[in-house]
Length: 421
Image (tube, rainbow, N blue to C red; front, top):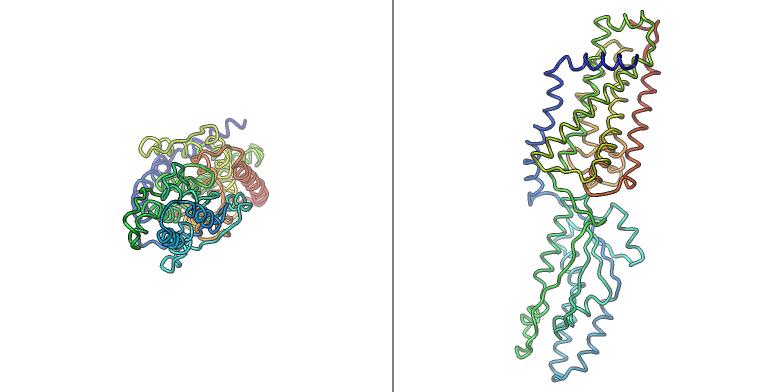
């Protein structure tokens, strides 16, 4: 019997093809428009930047200098040149410049907050979503660099820079800043500008570094971000569409005929729940198929994508049945209208459909993950970044629990036979 009810509900909901087609096509159109527009806004130099940078040093730059100074004493060159060289080198230690004159400069103080940590804290801050960029300085970095520049040693030091893929805008700003510093920094040119004796022929070299995300994943681009953001927002509109059409069934007396046939309300609501799930899954699948063809939004793990999509559809089904129960109880579609015209926009804002809420505060980030669209978006982005399902299983579980809790509430709210108007 449940199969017949699902078939009936499905036929009722797809009867209005124009409205249903709008729900399927409109998200893709909006992605096409906003994707390009918001990308240009994100690249704007006038955008407000608030980045938190953590620096982790495994060594001690002062000890590196002292060790280098001892090496210089054993080099055959006039004592005056040794003294002059060490004075200039002491002023140009690379990590000190990076911390004091670049990241800690007064000019960048409104945009960058820098903090220093011990090596033992590295794993903890890597797991903390608070920091935009983590700069890891290996042991003897400055000593190795000075030997490479001045004595021609082949070993080149490398910085490890971990970028938070959840803070794309500010991370890109800091990444470009550090990259520019790496490319332009040259101890030799600084010494030449300071008037070092030209008889000292020192090799020219640049500091090289490694760029990687905090979890060593490739950060997603802005267009992919908004593809996910718009899709999880528009699937919520389907819930109000479902409830409004279910109410029409009551107003046309079709539901009353079901009552006369002694059809259990649990069976009726289950049919709405499953039908909602199927249509939501079709909507998301079609949207991401179009995004894959036109915007190269590829899913590295198709199984995880299907699992997350089903979990999100369960949540949408739960919302749809709950709105249906409320509409039946008050005998009006005002609930559906209010949900689609106001609540969806609020959920989209909190869930990060418009911009990454994680850049606002940790509280907003956690609050966004409590919304069904925000939880779905978090899981989708994790898939796109190459995470295993085990690393984002909680959003999936939350979506399933949310959907089933809403379904149970819909059964409690649904009016009894004697209360039916």
